[in-house]
Structures are given as structure tokens and as C-alpha cells.
Amino acid sequence: MADVQKHLWLITVLQYLTKKDKPFLWVDTHAGRGLYDLQSDEAQKIKEYESGILRFYDDLINANDLPAPLAFYREKIADLNKSKDQLTIYPGSAYLAAKILRPTDKLYAFDLHKGEYPYLEKTLKNYIHSTTRFEDGFKGLKSIIPPKTIKRGGVLIDPSYEIKDEYANTAQAVINAYTKWPQGIYMIWYPILDKAFHFDLTEPLKALNLPDENFTIDEWHFGDVKKGMKGTGMVILNPPYGTSEAMFKMKIIYMKKYRKLMAQ
Image (tube, rainbow, N blue to C red; front, top):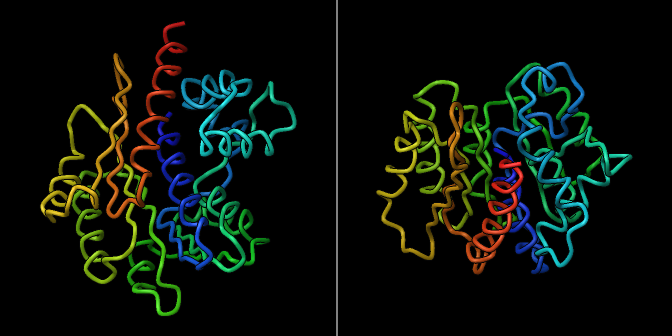
């Protein structure tokens, strides 16, 4: 469940950017593996996907008249799995971006986890527009913005938030990047927990006092969750025209289906 909101925002924004001929730059600061094996020991130990994408995908696979981002999401998941009845491979944000970007666009995917990076490198090695770096994503972002040749583009930021300070540190990294590249699109995912650490992220970004059309907070609350994440959120600086409205419609579709399936 945690990744669905992030992925749908990513697809919606990137599909918007590809409507114009001009190339764009996209940065994934915490890219992870790019592709995830749901049969791996790690996935089987936690099995988060069973209450998230697995239930939703079963309901989604035969749906009609889906919004374009949802249809694309379903298609890419289906392409990775030999049988629509068994979900074994799940796409990450870097893989989805690589599938959308055109040869003239540019993708930078960063990860500093020794166990994750080799998988990321393998996932993106055949995409000529993609560059992977074993590097801290915030430092990498700082080194390539403002872009010198490609002016359009944006950033997806999805830290692990394993320690409380990451929320405030992420906010400061976004503010620093925005100061250097105010035209960029900034999309920051965060978990909603009982302790509400996410306010350390959202409040400093609100303090930028951007106009409403240049600032969106989108939160998906899961309902009666006894432990763990209570929901997920995204802060978006400079959302492209119409993307917030498109995401609101998909949020309604998804959350209705999710709550119905969780009640079964």
C-alpha cells in the first residue's frame, strides 16, 4: 500500500512532462532496487505486499475505464509477471520512470545502500537515458542542479525515515534544492505514524509560503490500522497543471477499493 500513492503521483507527473517535445531531467534520490522480487526471503518475512498491492492488483486487473496512470501502472506490473494470477515481481519508482522517459530525457537514480545498489544498476543498465550512482541522493541532487542544458524536470524523494532526524533533514535538503532550482518539481513521500514525525517535514515546507497552485499536500489515511503506518503522504512543490486534480480522482478510486478489500 505504501508505494501505490507514490507510484501513481510519479506516473501522473511524468506522463504530463512527456506531453511536450522538450526533454526533461528526472532525479530519484533514494531509488532502491528498481525491481522487487516478492518471493525473496526479505519480502516473505514481512509480507507487506499482501495487504497492499496484491489485494488491489487482483481487483484492478479486470477493471475497465481506468485513468491513464492507473492503466499504465497495471500494464507495467502485468508485463513483469508471467501470470496475472500470481504477482511475483513489483516495480519500483526508478523502473517506472525508466519506462516512461524518452531517449532525449535524462534519469539519475541514486542509492547508497550496499545491498540495494547492485540490483538498481542491473535494473537500469539497458536504459540509455539512465545513470545510476552509488551516492547519497541529496549530495547527488546538489551536484546536478540547476541542470545546465535540460531545464525542465523534477525530483522524487523517498528516504527510509529510519531515524526521526530524517524528516527535518529531508525538508532542509528540499529547501536547499528549491533555492537552486525553483522551477523544478519536487515530490516527497512520507509515512504517517502515530508519533506524527512527518510534521517535521511538512511544516518547514509549508513555511516556504508558496502559492496554492505551487504547493500540494496529499495524504492517504488507511482507516483503522492497529500498528505500523496509519497512512502515507506526499508533498509536491510545483505540481504540473491538472495533476493534483487527477490524483484526487485516483485516490477516491483506490481508497474505496482498498477499504472494501481490507474489510473482506
